[in-house]
Image 1 (cartoon, rainbow, N blue to C red):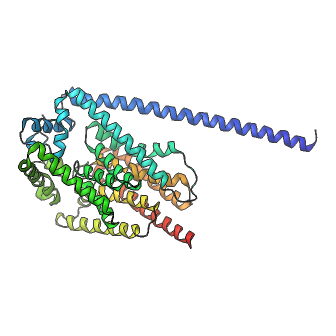
Image 2 (cartoon, rainbow, N blue to C red; image 1 turned 120 degrees about the vertical axis):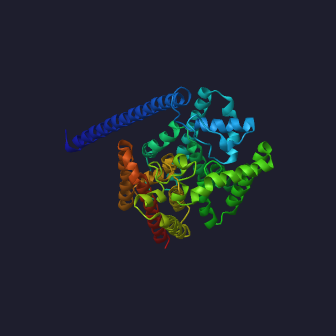
Image 3 (cartoon, rainbow, N blue to C red; image 1 turned 45 degrees about the horizontal axis):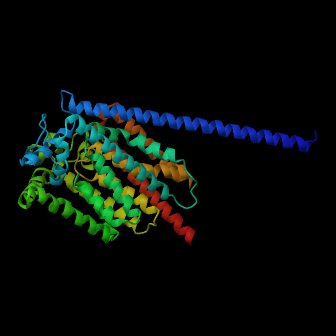
Length: 435
């Protein structure tokens, strides 16, 4: 056999070896994916049982579902929704329209109602994850390599799962809020600003703080989005509830909500101590609160300076994001919008851990940046922040007292900074490319 024939035989052998290696690698990956799916299914079933058990059969009230249900019953009975409470004494604290949505759950048994609530929450979070992955994948700069979509799903879910699970187990409404906020960004980026504005308004009618995200759209002069948002706030917050409560009672409920919840939340932490909701909701120093205000208090900033410093930080962060937004292109805007999401989580006086399921979008964007590998700095930066989030998340869930050091808040600040740095670098790269 001559050398040419030998090389041909060796080349074929190497090709067959490569094919076998790729096939075995692909098989290993497929098995890994199936194992991941199986584990997720088992965990969701187990979590569903645990959630229903906590609502319907446990001796101690550990979920908010019974509070929502009591508010729905108060609407049926035409009693004051802000006097509705569960056995543990937790009061209803959401805006008036949300209580109307709880009427069907008040008519269901605890088992069926909590089961339906759980399934709807899972559906909303699944949709939020899909939208986050699609936005992250579409935001990759030109020249980025194709990425593994499975990994793009797995990493954000892994890092956000403790906060998502916390909301699910306690039957919080945060799952719906996460879905609506991410949907508002997704619909806007899909060229459907009216639906996007309505989605953001719906999120704000569950938890008030999502309305701060409107600052981005005001800065960008997205008037259709803004107009739709305000229209739905009036429609969903005043006109439709007046059909159930009556016009006078609707205004009275909003007045009570501002007096009981919104007003005290905007005051200093010390002035809230006499409030009935202080232990349940308004204490900024609760371990679960991971806002910038809680961080400042943990750093022993004098209470009289906390609000002014927080306002300066919020305005300063907004100014940086707004400056970058004026220079961004269509793809870079996803990075900046993700930074606005993190800002939206950090600036409220109360930002409990289960709100941080909103990190799904920013984490998906950082994961996509790492996987795409456009440049080594972006990869290292994204990987560093993702690892930091993993360490802090694991640490705070293993050692609960570490919540008092606001590790989740620190990690969120890291995500915010990284997103803006990546947006700035990507903008500079695009401007050099076009010159």
